[in-house]
Length: 285
Ligand code: COA
Ligand code: NAP
Image (cartoon, rainbow, N blue to C red; front, side, top):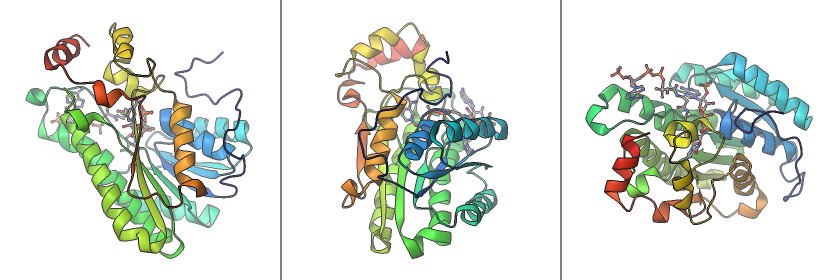
């Protein structure tokens, strides 16, 4: 049986929302071939969406698309794109529109991260994460807006994070990038609201079985003590993030825009209170 950290689809799924709540909508998902993004694709498809999943690694995307189609019976098209390359983004969005005729939902999930003290982070390391996460999310949003949503409306969900709320150690690059994404969410919500476009952020806490979780200490001996810091006393699941996306894209959220929905079991409110403990733990990851 596949481990939870492998990018397999759920063997069983019980709907909380109506299975046809997003019927025949089309979702364009960056970072949709792995981790949280892939589960978002699966759960959107289980609610009636067809999807375009994009990232840089073609083989992984192809394999993910096969699994997603088999698990859900919906269409899923993989498209190779580096969100830092605006020409590639335009080609990918154009290709999605040629195949599906519309894009109702955009999920900006593509991201890069690593742990690094600011003292040894090069400007290019900082820039790289800003370019993937923040500029990438803006580039894809702007392209989808120009080519489709400006005339037809839609829903944008930006996947951000809680890192910058408390100044998490070793994360100045990712925290700055996610802060920028949340700012983009609010600005675009204001500017594009009149075009019937809702723009929201979703900020996950630590989500088990993901690359982000592994990179930020999920394999360390401190995992058990990390879980103790979370008010809900457990890590989150990819499905919990994906179902929050379904909510944000559903008619139930029709008056919600410019919001940042935190899905973290209460973690950010209590984490990062002790600098010495954070530094000590981080130095041993
Ligand atoms: N510590 C410090 N700096 C690092 C680093 C680390 N662990 N990893 C990369 N960098 C720096 C590099 O040194 C380089 O800067 P330099 O030119 O000044 O040396 C810069 O970041 C770019 O690195 P590069 O490897 O060329 O970038 P890339 O575009 O090939 O890869 C990453 C981007 C680094 C973000 C890579 O981790 C990635 O592709 N991640 C995607 C998956 C992921 O991170 N998932 C988790 C999401 S939360
Ligand atoms: P992940 O599987 O590594 O997801 C990141 C995705 O981004 C990958 O599919 C990657 O695919 C893609 N990507 C990276 N650089 C790209 C680029 N330049 N162009 C296009 N695609 C690119 O990690 P994850 O943990 O599931 O993270 C998903 C999202 O959740 C991210 O936005 C992350 O910041 C956020 N998040 C995660 C956690 C967590 O606990 N996991 C917590 C808070 C927030 P390729 O390598 O094929 O390009």
